[in-house]
Length: 71
Image (spheres, helix red, strand yellow):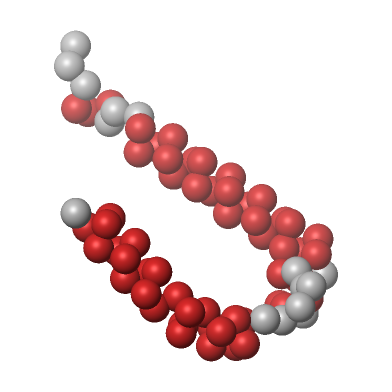
């Protein structure tokens, strides 16, 4: 029921809301390093480090603790 209500609400408000948001957010053909005014390799490196850190954290969460294992 919520999906239906949300779809109807979206359909009714889209013509009024989209032009306002599009006018504010339309920056043309740019990409993230241009918006942040930094070198693209810096963003690639930061993205890589954050991704590796998240993989490490997720791996640690998935491992059982050694003091709580049943032998």
